[in-house]
Image 1 (tube, rainbow, N blue to C red):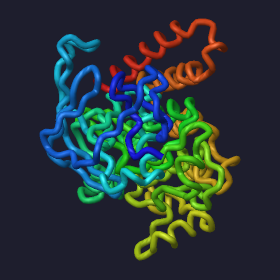
Image 2 (tube, one colour):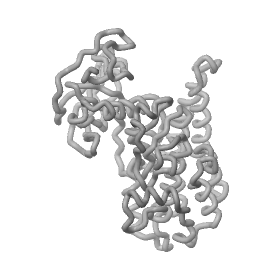
Image 3 (spheres, rainbow, N blue to C red):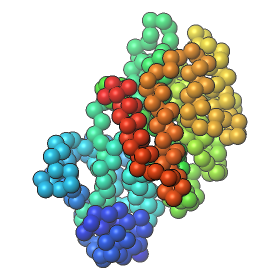
Image 4 (cartoon, rainbow, N blue to C red):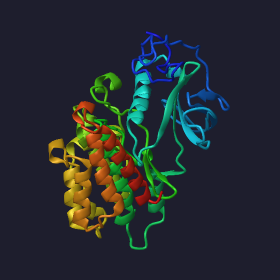
Length: 382
């Protein structure tokens, strides 16, 4: 198998097959470059412009994330668009020859390329430079939800709440549900929904990120190698056992995020427990009621989360919008313009996910979805 990366050097098309020798879009031979490290100042070609690497802002097992700057070509298709900062995720050069790592990295790019939603980080493209993969994504000025949760725990509410009040928690949660509804319409399962992967922009807009282990349609075995990736405290029982997963697995994780926003802790992460013990608890223990940790919470919240965290996926809410509606109506939360737009956009995403031949006027559907995306952004203050 070739040791190169699946981006055509001529037309910049993403090549899904890592061992491809020819670009399926333009037919040209895929030339492979010698390996090297990408450093600050390196310019990555994107076809319609260039992304220049800046300082390192994060690092993990799969690679590093750098802040960068996107420059648009003066005579390109996006001429006139102002240059702006971006986040650039680079696959660890030590993993470039490992098929599974490369497949997961490419899978993240493919997943992001398929989705356009206000609450999902925008994808500007995947590129390959000197045999290294890089994803160019939206730069989010803000902090992850995990930091917001820590701040609320530290600065305990005067009312005695251990973490967030319900209204701000719903503001974030409703946007997360909108993002999940969109990817689930495309049969994409995120598989790693957790507060550190939910970015909160300074204006309160939520951005779901890190699709590194996302499962794409008909490709779970190929992308995951049959393993059970994820973060123990947020994994559904079927994910822990490497069983069949679908949208309800993400909704299970989302419910744990809501539980944590309200209580300051996850249901099964008891102090001193190991990662293995937490995963075992996901299989064997019922979640504690929210009212045991937040006495002010309405009892109906216990019932909603008990269903959302059911061990059997068949007993959970079938989709993100139904979970949100059950929560909103039961707690008497207002049917805000943002949530109305999220519901309508989820419906538009479902229509667009069907085969083109089954949609009589796809252009009209795309225009409707574009308008609804604008409605969501305006409703949340963008």
